[in-house]
Length: 619
Image (cartoon, rainbow, N blue to C red; front, side, top):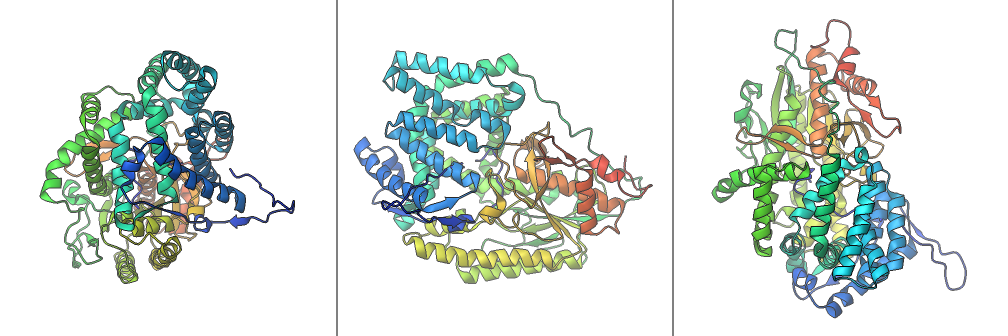
């Protein structure tokens, strides 16, 4: 799916060796990719949101079934992927806590933290849960004044000991999230994300079951301590609030029209672009397609569309200004900025019912792709008067599409991608940004939400069949335009793109690179995915760009990092059009600076452009 900004957003676990009773070594099943993991389903006669709020006996009966299957995964499968281990251990932690196995849960927190690879996550993962568990053990209670006082002390000591320069992004975003938290939001999220699958298929799968159990743990353990956590985090932020320096302005190059620049076509293969706000930087094709003069656009069913921007209903269009203000509120909360928009957002969310939250979250699912492509486009052409935008629109929010996918639909989309590839090749589009990606699990979620999830084996079979068509279509489209450089987002799930089989980020092709996200100081973001195809990193945190209508907003995600690299590639092509995609990749990688730990390779426009032959450097 489109790599959603962190404002709109998922769950991010170790396995125990269990011998046979006979004492012989139990040969585990090796898990090489995510689709190797087993599938389970849990029948439901009512709504998941009702089970979430059910009595202890009813919910615990469900949790016990999930735990049995989770234990089987621990026993029978050999998993090396750390993100998967973190996810599984996260589910185990919630189940242990709900069962009041506090000492065991504390050990699980330690294991989780040991699996973290990013500096901030190594320090902050499970911090709140650890303080709750230690307080429960110390006070032999789960509520009351003594419990709250002990928790406040433990949580404050844990937070105050953290180094600000490492965890400041976590502290700010954590406080913003806690400030908005409420029972209505937790229940409303389940109504949005899980109830549709239950309504259509009558079951929840492994991931949905884990999300439901996590929501229960939030209601039971996190929400009652909301005010204490906000107070502790606020005091910590107020005492240390020095913003990290921004490294990107010193690295950026702005070209000007007086230089000898060659016009360069920049493709935005995304959810659509508001072409009205980019003026003469939009490509006008003398040979229009069925969509018009700016590229190609396809509707959800794969048919040609005349709309360059993701289409809204009149009612959705009317709500857009309201949601746009909320986007700014989210960004400000995420940055500990007490703006009018942040205050209005807190007030609004404090008054909404779970049904109203559900309605709002479903609106976000539509307005996210409406905003996404335009924001990406603005980043891609910033500071480059030679850039001309080419639109390649389709809807990648696969699990949110309301119809059930078929192989006929998949082949139709494959044909659309082939036409896009042909368009890029015949119009000499030099660089294409792809801030999206899809995995087999997304096709499974889509099938589940549209009524085909009851039989896990059949759902997996159909999902893999559909995914393979999709995978081959994307791969072929990139291969068939060899003179075009494709740049994609690594993903926002803090996972290995190759293990997930995320397409396009997992593909190994000579004219494709994947991009990870760092913040303004060049530090790894908590959400960025990684893998052997992710060869450079760029600013993907609070990146400002246009949204439909011409307003500028800050959004975060690898979706924003990828077009920053596209921006650099387009400038290189404008300065030296004879470059091949392979040469541009080499110049981008050679100009990047590597972090001390070797994990990050930060793009540097000035260094890369300086590597071009003399006389082509921009100012």
